[in-house]
Image (spheres, rainbow, N blue to C red):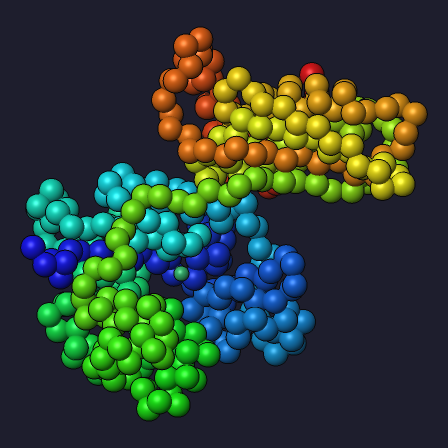
Length: 392
Ligand SMILES: [Mg+2]
């Protein structure tokens, strides 16, 4: 079997942040909505109507407001976006055994073999998946299909502009497609590479794939050669389930005031624990090494850490250990300026019961409680339920 028989889909959410806001607040549908970064105040996502109005990506809010006073501007809620992203990815995982999450709103999905399972051809299958995501999650996606990641990615960009949101690049006809594609449309070709290739007279993808391997190797390196073969429909980069886990998760912040009040510090620490744990759950991971940091008014740092009996992603378990650690480094005679938590040794939450004495009932309870907290937070905003495990 040639790798050209592989079928890879790239599922890409359309204007994802805006789409999430519209899902939560349906009144925003069909309106010129822009999402504004809570960091730098610039436009980071636009609805179709906002694009048509002329609002530009990266435009500062004050300028957009002045030029387009009828636009609707919403401040980004990244907790919401990552929760919805999680829901989309889970739906994809139910659909196909192999899902390669590429970014918050994109994933490569292995389609090979699914046509038999679902008894429909791949294009119909993509349309079916697209409708399923719309019906179940109210999120609209574009789907590109082909035999390599690079072609699937290109196809998904083209899918944005076709009715039905699905685009297929037949690997046997990839060369024809390359004639209609300029190099800057290709995944992995940025501004610098475009300039470099233009200076060698390479303007279209067709001109790129007809260069020899040696030429590409010399000009761009191994990456160039791989790109060419992917564009010709060969699967070089496979779809895998592996997600890169972070080495550690850290949350630190200055206390509102200098203080030696242990309850106040515990309360602040709990907020950090909550953020860290909800991140763990979002990425489907657990941690078994917990560190607590205290920084005094004169910038002295006290830090200690511990290893738990079993990995966890639950606030109340981390909190028990963290308060213990806090007790070891806290001195009531000192004033403190900040506190923080660090979680290390992060591993996948396999869902298996590996521990001899683990209590299955308790684990189920934990899972339900955490899911409940995460849901409430999506509905009512960040930190809404922080006191749920704060006051002991
Ligand atoms: Mg997208």
